[in-house]
Image 1 (cartoon, rainbow, N blue to C red):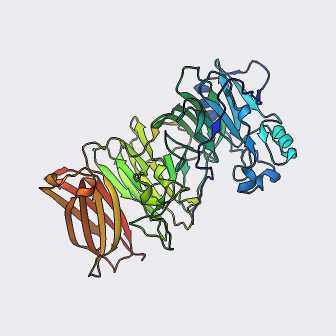
Image 2 (image 1 turned 90 degrees about the horizontal axis):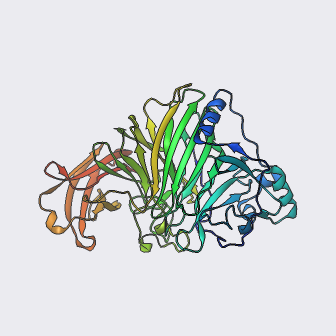
Image 3 (image 1 turned 135 degrees about the horizontal axis):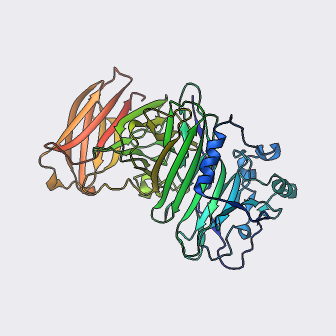
Length: 507
C-alpha cells in the first residue's frame, strides 16, 4: 500500500534576527563566482538528462540515524542567517542533513549575475555534540533551507517558506501556520511499480535588493527518469504567491506524471467519522478538493480517509485551477489547541497558459495517524512525458485561506453524514453559504447517486449561516460504494459549487 511520510516541521513560525549587527557565520567560496541565469539551470538539466541518474550524496550514518527529537537539536544559528545583518528584507537559514533528510543538497547565492556556493563553518549550527559541528563543516552540504521575511511583524523576519525533503516545499501566508505541502513533480503516485520521488538537488537563490518585496529561487530537479529546471518567483504576504516556471527533460517515457502536486492530511470530519473516539470533531490539513473547470464550473469534492486506496479523476482540457482547501476557520470546528488546524493554509494552482487535455487526479490513502500525509492532488497530462522531448509549463501557486474567485456563487461550507432518524437509510447533509432564504425560490436540487438509489433530496433555509441546507437520503446498502453529485440550479443556471463525494459503506 503506498504511503507518504509527513514532513515533520514545527507548525510555529521561527524568528530570526533582522537588525544590524547579526554576523554571518556562513562564508561564501573564494573567487569571483560563475556567470548565472535561468538558462544555466536549464542547460544543466538538459545535459544531465543525456546520462543515467546519479543518486546524490547521503548524510553519514551518525546523522541519518538521528530520530526526530535528536535532529531538532541541530539548529542553524540566527547570527548565521544569510543577509541577516544587511538591508535586504529577506534572509535564509539552512537545515543540516540527517534524520529523514539524507540527500545532500547544494545551495548557491546569486549576486550581480554570478553564483557562489554557500559553505558551512563549524559555528554555523548549534549542535548537541561538538563532533557534529566539524562533521557538518566537512560535509559542506545541506538538507534544505527556509526563507524569512517580515510577514506579520515589521521588525522580525519570520519563516514563511521551506524547501526540505525530496522536492517538497511548503509555505504560509500572513496569520497562518504550516499545513499541507507542495512538490516539484509527482511520478507514479499509487502506481503498481511504486512511486518515484524526484529531488531538488541544488538551489540558486538570487539576492533581492533592499527595496524588493519579492525574491527568486531556482532549483535543479533530478530523478531516475527525468530532470528539470525550476524558477520560483516568490511574493510573501496575504496570500503568499509563487510563480513557477518549469522545463522538464525526460530520460525515459513517463506515462503517469503529476504536475503541480499537492500533498495533505485528512483523518476525519463530520462526513467521514473517526473510527476511534476523539474529542476533536475534525482532524485535517485540508477538507476538500476544489476545481475550477475550463467551462467555468466550480467543483467541491469532500475528502475522506478510506479503508482502501481510492483514486479519482476529474477530466478537463486547459483547467482554470485546482487546489486542496481548508475552508473551516473556526476553532470550535477542530477543538485542537496545539495543531490549530483552523489556521492551516489552503493551496491553489492556477495554470498559466494552456495545459491541454488530462485530468486532476485525487489520491486518498488509508491512514491511522495525523503525522502522515495521505491526500495527493495533481494535474495528470493525457500524453505524459516523452523521452528526448523537453516539456515546458508554468503555474501560479498561492497559499490562501480558501479557493479564490468564489464571489457570486454559493460555497459548500460543511458536509456531514449519518443515519436518518427513524429510518434505516443513510443521510447526507450539505450546507451552502450565501443563499438567503428569499433567494431559495425556484432553486431545485439536482442529485444523483451511482450505484444506489436516492430516496429523498430537499433544501431548506439555514439562516444561521445566511445560506441553505440540503438533505439527501440514500439507499445503497447492497453496494460497496457510490459516486454522489449535487447541483443547485435555478432553471439551467448553477447557483452553487457542484458537490461531489465518493460514498463508501464502511460503517
